[in-house]
Image (cartoon, rainbow, N blue to C red; front, side, top):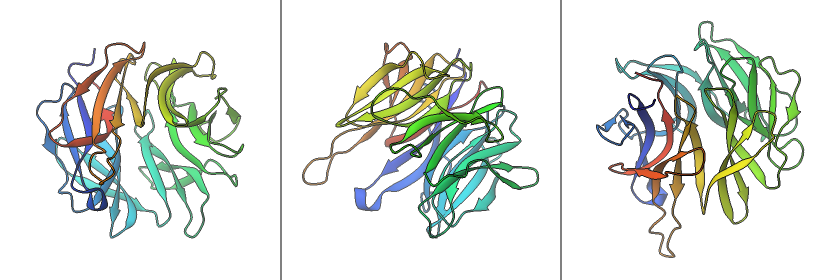
Length: 279
């Protein structure tokens, strides 16, 4: 089940040119929203620890990317590290002892995937390629990592061992792939795909076979799994109007069969949702 769970997301408000983004948490049905940050720093990509109520997220502190850990229960927050180049979407390993993320060295456009041990704060570089490697996500047994890379020309999905070895491409269809997330059951990988002008969220077997589209729209991002691996949460952005209004973002929930989609109501625009483990 998933009823005894919560969803963390980014609550957004204000004009597009001066958007205020706060971390927020709610019950999985949209009730009991609480705000966890003040909105004075840009926050992005909150992700739950798979074994407890700890969250890692990215924040821009004085315009520099900074990765944080936040204990939802106590409110205690700590800085994992400052990364002066572009930094993307940190995620926990299944054993909670490390986080995997991608970042670029200053003054380079190239990003690589790194593993950080949370006890020692030591970094291990897992990829080394002229392409851009981003969006790593562990398999639930901790042995593999799926990520996206444009090393072959356009962004596609790859898997590798947790030490960076035995790398192979798994995406087989046409279009640009991104945002891969391994199911907690280990059976599927969810992803976002773009075939202009549309975006798609789908699932595939872990070897890339049996790709199936779950939902299609103008703009879809950030799929995340329910703890039982049978549902996806994601956010949808509406088209902007010519005067700059519109463009609202809403959080949705759907069965991986593509049925039973519903909106999860939020007091403000919502993006970047992530599901908690069972409470």
